[in-house]
Length: 498
Image 1 (cartoon, rainbow, N blue to C red):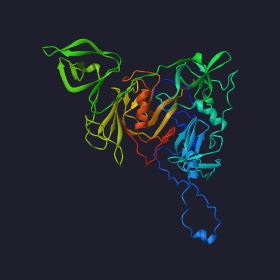
Image 2: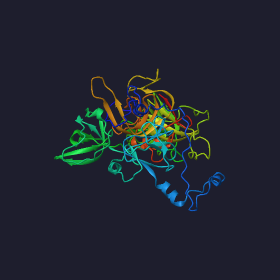
Image 3: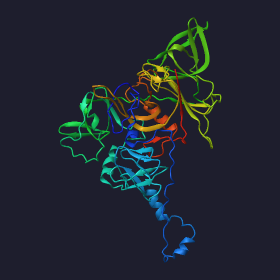
Image 4: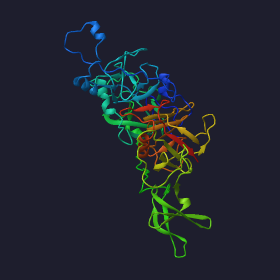
């Protein structure tokens, strides 16, 4: 995560690359931490239709055959039945109890299919729970969640739905120092449910970020309609230029080892008749990549690497060389390079894992013993260290082996400050929590891949972060906005070294 600050949305993540704070969702729920299994009762089945014949006597009911299958009309009703979010955080719980562990979440404009149209008696202020696909239960109280697709609040929220099919679900910009407003004169905004705005951070300090969905005109001013449905003056925001960098899928055409180029363009070399490397006028542009043959040549104190680019060579110190640092997977199998990536296993675990070189600034994604993807990252600007008591020095990435436990399509990250406004990173896309306050996530505020830029998290380009989010485990079910793993869920391992 960047060491800069950002605009907060409801449910901001205090643990993300900041001084350790409890996650807002867990704090609100009193949910147990990830990795603790909670038994889930079987969801209620859909009701069987009653025949039109006269009601049989009780003794006949006792000896009757199992109920007939749900008729087509009931099946169609179930397929179309959904629960709709009316807030920023609608929790999907492991059991139909308000304090049960959260295993997923819906957000603004979100909805999910019901597994059963039969309500389950609620408790603790929830009138009724409903089982949802593919698992879990949602409290439907009419305030935070509804079954009515025509609900006026639900309809008003649809234009503000984050665009989860894009690398950047919102539009983003840097705060120049501003105040958020709940309403603006001359614009008739809907009456939103209580709690949809975050009232803690109405002042947004310079260099924090904001996220928004629309622009509106009111009172001769252009306003940005922010992700938490407050209003921000457009002239107090500097839009970010989205990064277009992306990594490479590995297979027969692209394989390791390979070199990326960070910071600036780097010259190409050719061997002279005497076998000495000579600089040419051609260059590899910044963030370009090239395959390596594995051959090298030492000339004095310099080492040159042969590339697969028409006989060109590259000075080793000019390149970020991406190749496995270990010979075996976390499960002890030898790593294999080259050839087509593995096909999905018919059964059993995928054994996904990620290798990250924090100082060199690269990442390799593996399916068991085969690398399938490689890219540049940006880790802590102060380097990487072994954690002590779950902490490392500021702006430092933790070394070690971890597992992904929670994932959010977007999550607002906060860096608290004493006697000053917090730094806020608004709606950080494709956030994956792996340890303490550290995450893998997209960075929309810089394009300096391969260089240390973050406050300790591992930054990826938006395109790469989106791909990795959907590739890793635990998988986020269709239409969910977040997921939390339980003990029985598969989880992608994260191996970080220098």
